[in-house]
Length: 207
Image 1 (cartoon, rainbow, N blue to C red):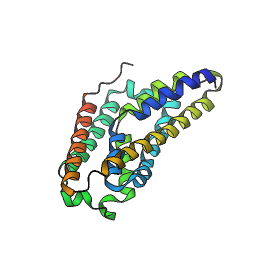
Image 2 (cartoon, rainbow, N blue to C red):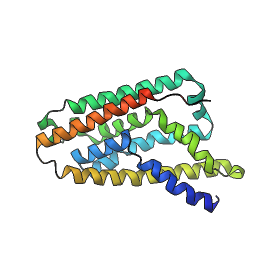
Image 3 (cartoon, rainbow, N blue to C red):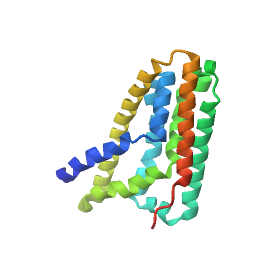
């Protein structure tokens, strides 16, 4: 790959990774509630969701979101509904539930599934892969360069996850009481609902 393009790609890509959206809000909230290690492990769910998205963008299937109105609407509405459901669940959580780390409510698999579904239900992610990554691909070695760019994106995504998890851990230290954690959950839940409304307002890009 062209070194100059790579030096432009890395900071631009990391800025996208660090953008505050539903998944980064989720890892911050999880870290405050169950600790950074569990939150980072759960964030592997979003990586699992991103891999087929990057592959789809690489072979051109990402354009389906810009050419098919019904497909775009299905992804958007399903993603918005799930975000709203998570938000309402946090808004209605009780103080004692907020402080409990039970296998039923806070299992790593459950949190990983949440990360996966939030990532998979956000059409903005695959649109980023479709519009952003190809700008840095080497035309004479398309497959290898696209794979490398995708791998770098996922690597920097994990770095962003770790930073947001540390932020959540710092916040969690000040949330010792159940009632304080409840207010934190309400703030996080409210933001989830706002993000769900933002998804519904999202328009299909012009083809």
